[in-house]
Length: 394
Ligand SMILES: [Zn+2]
Image: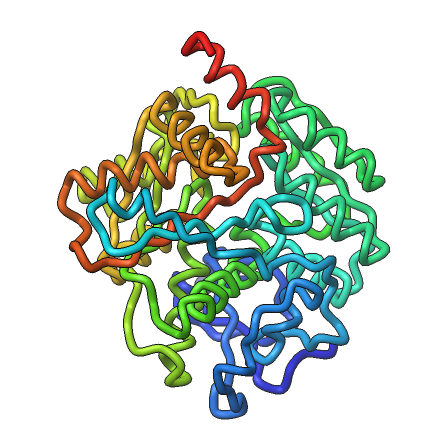
């Protein structure tokens, strides 16, 4: 397996054990999360080394990834715009607000970044098939990247998954199992299938490459803010790979002297399924599973998030927090940005409604720069957003 010279295998977040690049999933000693390590002394970077490039996809950042540009499976993910929203800055009482519009990624989702890396790793490990449970976006991305890599994909999605996701899994040539019930039922069907099959899991926080790929989001935000860190990034959060990735990405830039400041990271969740926000409020070290998840915002309905304590640690160490808002506020947030011309997904609306709550709590200062991440395009969730308008008689 050909890796970049600086890639130095993994460290287990739970037990601290070091593992070489031959590992591909969880820690073989304790089952904990693996975190990719690098010999940063072998990497010579300047700001120009990390210039976003939509055509190159995450290969634009190959210096800081496990695989080189010639190896990476990419379909032009990343390189998404950072859009200024001056009106929102006034509303939130801060200096500037930007939307990082990940809906403009290849399959319309931020998780393309991690999927590109995870599918690359699967192919490099000799896999012929990748598999995962998903609320829809992950399945769609896995199908697209597996197709690009010449692999087969197997997605397990609950019946409530949006039509666009299901259709595009098929269109990309992926295999899909639609499971009655919710995410936990799809995850159980996935686990059952994995006991019989030799498929390579690309599930979040099972493949260490899913969260690793998300760190490129931090590189891009910093580059687009002329190599400054925003004061706050609000990221709608299901499993939490975005939070872990952002924390690592900003830290690596500081390691290389490319960034002086820190960004506080905020996880925005839906009130009907808010394990991180509940844990945060309770002062708990890790989230407890939500017994009866209920939110219309499907990508956020993850009752037992795989990032667990690692996500809470990232929020804490950056001076951020987790926050939850109700479905109506989330949908209103998404629609209000759509009315400003941004194709905001329903889950992206949680970033804005969460930011309003944080502003009321005094989390922001008047001179702060705040970035709201839109993790999915509104085109995938047009029915949910349109229904919200109809509920208001529009
Ligand atoms: Zn371990």
